[in-house]
Image (cartoon, rainbow, N blue to C red; front, side, top):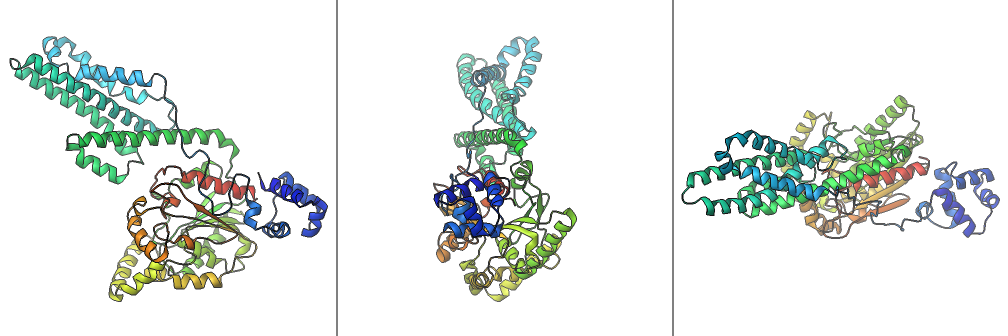
Length: 526
């Protein structure tokens, strides 16, 4: 249900005509008609007036029929994708495994019939290439290489098992009379199977995002431990296979809706990073999110402010950046999505009334609007000498990476409960700007990546349920609040909501969440 349909439905529930509603709002009947037909969208002021007339909150006014009242879980379209395999996939895999087993265990035959060596060598090389053809409808080069790698590993797992049985059989047949023949055959088998294994392993290690550092390291360390290495190999194959299915399915979805440009908002997006990070072209703070938004029609800018500074100083930088974007692009306004401390920075910037006409909407993501209780504790317990040493080291490195005047301690102090609660009380919602917020939480410490798995316990002790840094009670701000969650042990961390680790989380597709978020801004006319 779009906003126009929602207005029509609420108007009829209250037994009002378009003329009666228009009279209460002080607008024309044609305006009401245009809203309900989806030809235009009410301004923020009219949305507030509509909510007052219908006796509901603005969040309930904007709520579609598929949504729940806030807070709502992250129930997003198509959280899991499955790319169909060819009907010939399993037979082809078995056939290639059998042929590989024949090649790798053919030393005795080739020693008797050396004229077959070129044919055996050609067959083995071909079988190291064929796995890449198991799925031909793979959209990107990275995924095609990744698919080739995982199919090679599947072939290795099956053919190595068959080769083990073959070598036992040959040992019974050849030993003890032909010990050297069997030994050379075993060495040839190990060498050829190793080539296939490394063909696959290098491909998946170089192209998979979902293996992660932990599984890569453990796979390398335990790769030499019998039986344990098989377990890790199966886990690697499963992880990469799930990644392939998910990404191929996502690609199919993206291609099916590409023409709709559902994220093509009236005003461009300005993404504002949190503390201790900078906008960097080589490692995007927002992970895969900007590319997904741009593919669906969004225009994306970045805050490009310092990594660490006080809220007031960061606000000054952002004010200058917003005016620069509006002047250079002629876009009139921007839609802001701000993560963590970035939400406080933009709120402070909007205290300047001259900036408000340049901002259509603000969405804060996991922002500590009421601060982080454990930040107060750390500042109290850590000796001032150590604080100064940390500050000096950070500021020195930050300057090397582009900060003009970093201020580590000012940034930390502005995240404390004492500062944020006072700031929240003294900073009202900016008039004429649509404001909303998003938050999430980890379900257990083990659900977060380092160091959030450690800070989660500290934050939980002082603040209760949290995302690894910020308390759940600190997220809510503005006219609408969404709480993202998934069942099970994992949850959604402070880094997960910006795709910091590029991880596909079961039952939560972060890229799809932002596409949904921005498409709703588009529907509202922003």
